[in-house]
Length: 281
Image (cartoon, rainbow, N blue to C red; front, side):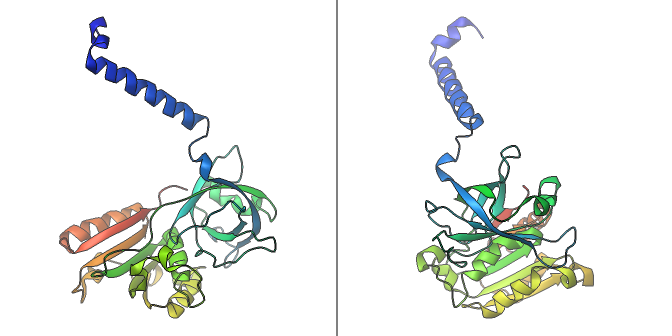
């Protein structure tokens, strides 16, 4: 660019934005992004759910530090088990206060991790009780809140069931979650669709069924089992649906795209899609 450009207002703006961008990049590279939300936690327990297979999900319970200020159902955290590996995002699969505290008063929270790649495939063999873990968060607003005039519909697929585990736990009669954390719309009945590849071997299905059966207000569960040919289609949401709906979805990106298209073509503005696309491991 000609030298006179830098003396003009547009050139000055380029300089300001360039300096600001460089500062932001340095902060990120030094690992200071999210630092105020980082907590040193401890692995309280770790176990495989269901039969010990290669695709068995891992349940990890963490004892948080006293500085942990709690979370809302549906939020996620970044967990770093190894400084060299860095942090990975995982949805919190327990409602606030659902697991209580340790004898030392440390709040407990649960992560459910499915083996989806090189990192998560090896976690079961590398984690043990007493191990330190850095937890950053919580983040997110997948809270199932919405308008009181709209029907609530939950759609979960695969590892996308994890935020709904926390939302379901918050609806249990024994839940201690505050009304503020749940929001007014948690007082409404819910229509829930759970998509699984094989219901017979799904390690989380029984837990989901138990939570739905005991939920107050009620959660009406439909299981879509791919192995038996009972596939989920957005058209199923249109059956006898007279009220506008808030559709909360967490699952594979492809199914999310199908639902988004259906909200336009079938819902015609009456369906609002809220989604958590779990594409990161």
